[in-house]
Amino acid sequence: MRAALAPVIASHICLHAAMTGMRMAAPLFALGHGFGEAAAGVLVALFAVTQIFLSLPAGRFADRRGFKKPMGLAVIATVVGVSLAATWPMYPVLCLTALLCGGGAGAATIALQRHVGRMAAGASELREVFSWVAIAPAASNFLGPFAAGLMIDHGGYRAAFAMLAAMPLLAWALLHCVHEAPIEATLGAQKSPAWDLLRDRGLRRLMLMNWFMNSSWDLHGFMVPLLGHERGLSASVIGSILGAFAIAAAIVRLMIPVFARQLREWALITGATAVAGLMFLLYPFTRSAATMGLCSIVIGMALGLVQPMVMSMLHQITPKHRHGEALAVRLILINLSSVGMPMLFGAVGGVLGASGVFWAMGTIVGVGSHLGTGLRELGEDAAEH
Image (cartoon, rainbow, N blue to C red):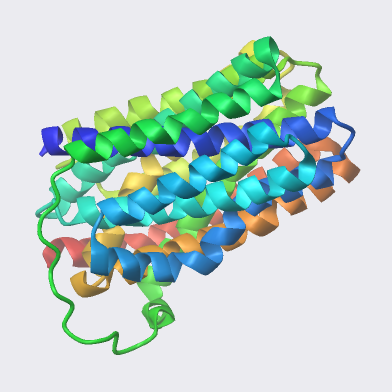
């Protein structure tokens, strides 16, 4: 199974790295060209807008067409978007680039999660497979920002955008190594709307904890460049701090398969969310790049644990024939947050500074982490079935 996962993970890294690199470079471009923090927040938010509207169609398209065709369309959208930014590096074009890159990344994520979910058998194998798959965004969150930061410092923004535009082409080449099982025929249309899934109280609680994780991830990715900009750090140093976060998330996910049979999803989700909240409260007290990097590593390890656990529970408690819909609903909810939260972060940061945003989010996440204890009964029921 691991051999079959390798090209899937590698292709997703290449595609997702282009998006994460642009998500760091675009707000830095805006700040460096006289735009305010609110404008930078709008840019980051636009990476999530397309996913809100396209997730359900993308999920149903993946149900009908499998993995490779949605990935191919995602590659095209990302290459076009980043190439536009390299050709015309200006704020309005970057807004269009954000929409295209975000839409491509969302469609690719749904197709990949649906594909690998069908490769696993049983709860422990689900935890294992999603821990391996979760390495892709963790690795791309290092590769994209770090490479973009180095290129910005040494070649300028246009060169960085051109480099990022080449990454999805590698994903396209890797797709030829992916073996895809024949697509099963869909028996009839959907009987009920996708949002009907949220009538389940346990699934609602799981989605809320997933929101805490995603908002924390967005906060770190957006506010660290702003905090670094306030303290006069270079783009490559900021990229390295974000890279340390991504490496920590990847390392902890590499450890999950070793202990997959002993892990309990609800306990890890609750504990990791509490640790993330505490670290956000401490982050503003870090005064050097080294201490910021250390805090980034701890947050990366905490949040790195959460996503595989959420995906494992989601596949266990959702009917198999509705996995695509459930994945789409999850993506819509977290991207609704990703649209609003960066703009809120930018607005609050303009008034209170970056430190005030960290303290506010740390309090919210820390207090909300106790909701994770309600997942215990849900996890036990899923394990029994």
